[in-house]
Length: 312
Ligand code: UDP
Ligand code: MG
Image (cartoon, rainbow, N blue to C red; front, side, top):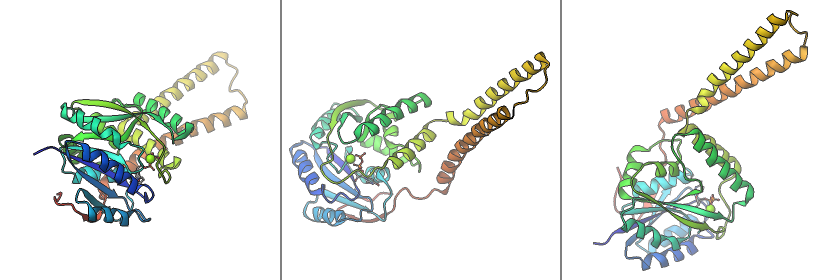
């Protein structure tokens, strides 16, 4: 029996592109020597996407569908796809055709060569705009400095993993606050990269606002680095040193305390600013601890279609 490829596609209000995505992807998959399944995860869409997906699943047994009870986010959708996939190789991709299906044969080739993690690196992102691209570069610089693990800059949510790696992700990376593509790059196993050009969205609009991206960046830093927590110690040492110098200076010059209202106000504001920032940082970590502790489900499945195997 040949190998099987699972394509996991997260869908959130993508009615305009779904049919086109399906046609283009199927055309590529039919040519592959691998058997395949197309696993769509409907992440609580409220447009016509669910009907379109049901239609596809009704006429093509290769198409499988998982529908969430509400919107849980792109990563939750990918995790659900990994959980329910039955292939020897699993590829996560977006529904908007920014991840070209034409790359799939390259990915299966890498799987055939024995690679277990295929990370797709985009060389160009036409649709994102200079500001988003700049933020993305800055984000990877910061996270690589702050964390012990290495992140490929420009890695995307387009990646392929073997069933063995999917198993590891499924069993050991069930965090509520997470960075899936970071885990994929850091599980080890034999890994390779393929470059691709991210074209513009085929239709519809981006579901990621700048605010969401900012939240996402903060979470990732908190997830992968303890450095911000140590900021308090550094700030404390720095303040102590400054205090010491001022004290010695005052004692030596023996002209008493300088009569500076402004100096005092500025100093107090400055010190409190540092203090509040540190309290805020601790708050971020506590918030994440709290979220993990509550242990709420990563996603809730409302219904499935064509899904033969069950997942514990
Ligand atoms: N998506 C999702 N849930 C969300 C937001 C997005 O499943 O809450 C899907 C979306 O349908 C698309 C993919 O994630 O298939 C990437 O989203 P988008 O293209 O909007 O992001 P961008 O490419 O602009 O970063
Ligand atoms: Mg996109």
